[in-house]
Length: 72
Image: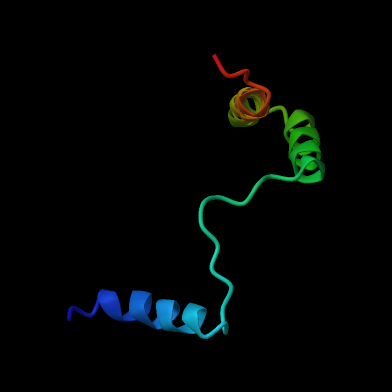
């Protein structure tokens, strides 16, 4: 067994015994945090902040749209 498998096996054993909560996937971004980040990025006038805010808004719109998508 390689040393890379040891932490994974340790986590799996702890999860099996109920000692650790294992989550899969990504944690959702709460709207309050999104609003705070957008406000802070809007207040900062640097080029990187303008790009970051635009990117964040586009990503948020795509994430929200995926939940209301109609099945074909």
